[in-house]
Length: 442
Image (tube, rainbow, N blue to C red; front, side, top):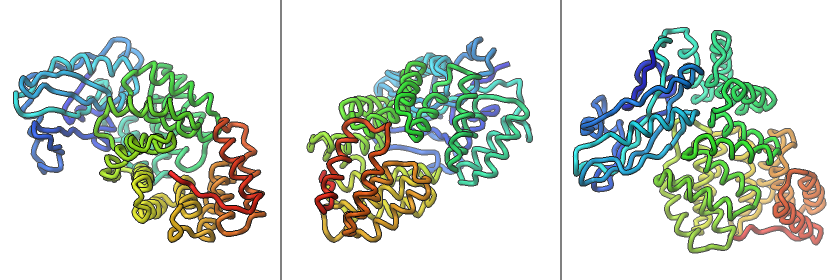
């Protein structure tokens, strides 16, 4: 028997619902409400739901043992309480399950005059597999908890045991993400490949593999996987966000803006995406758009559920502060990002770049930038040309132009560079050869 639950739903045994997901809502006055506002009591937006239809569990999905939890944003007509639109904030990983949830949610109804938006998890769980201690679901849930705490060794041990009991997509995806977090990229790629082999319709597996492929300097493969994820789940917000970041890093700002805009349409309150689009607008020379989005992005409260999410949020907010000319706050967030994620080369790259290239003299520190960028290079085993590029500009700021030229040439020795990115690095190298440092003007 299949069981689907849909309020702050954990129901029978979705391992992610109690760890990552919770329901929240925006009332008719525009005020957001969260479960933490009500202690142990049920959120009033759920008490005000007067009609609910359980999503059906498609026969094909049951046969394939497809399970997963998605998050859906519901827009309501305040006057009638009826549903006007439903978008996927986080996919279940299976478009067939997402579509089933959306079809049911469109029939729901709330008390008029109370709520304008509700965000809710929906878990699809095969009820015949009880969530008992030591079961594959229990072990995967336990592994996720370890992963979110940063205890990667314990997480991998739990996922290993879950897969030993029953090889299934969720466990492989989560183990891949854990391997990726500790730099074991070959193992991560193997697990993502296995997840896709087990279920070629898993949008989440394609999306997460694309992130790794970008890290492996395989941009064409990454883009193909992002495209496939969106094909499988057309309202998968995170896929648009990540593909936008892919385009941004490739200096394809037009496509990046399009994807960030779509991600904002799907998830209007996600200030992270405003931060990404603000930076992209700034690089395009759209100063009005950059300022408008940056003013939204600085309202970001970094996610505290997972240290890597928090560190990334801080770096995005730092970019917004830079656009607004608030360099001191940007530096604060970048230093905090390293404190939170001391093993993330990206955190070192961002701070080193800021210290080496900030247009305001009082914030530049070439020697510290060299030290920080060097740590980032060592952490990434000198395989990340972006961090090497940051080391080059750091050496230039420190006045060591011979080293700047050496590292600048090394940063160009990357066949995966997009044409615009290569052109930018070549221009910086020319500056170093003229014994000039580089300033990153927004």
